Length: 103
Image (cartoon, rainbow, N blue to C red; front, side):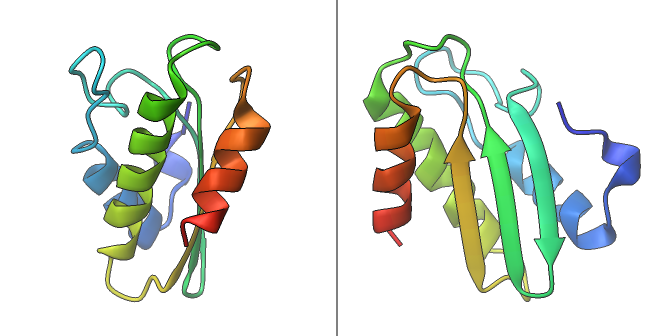
């Protein structure tokens, strides 16, 4: 889970935007549920790492959440490039590949 106090102003803005991303299976905010593991913004590049409620969550939901995270990150002024990764999922390699190819 991300420690909010250690975030820069831009990272904090991204964190706030990610509160709008809702898990489609359970209907709660991924931030409120503690699913964001890392937020890092350097210059115009953002990196967000997240996990899901269970390691066997349907890949379609994992991809949906990852794409929503990316969309929210790109809505931040000054952020031009975003890397989104899921961790702890039984198909994380395939999901991360799909998220990267979706750029």
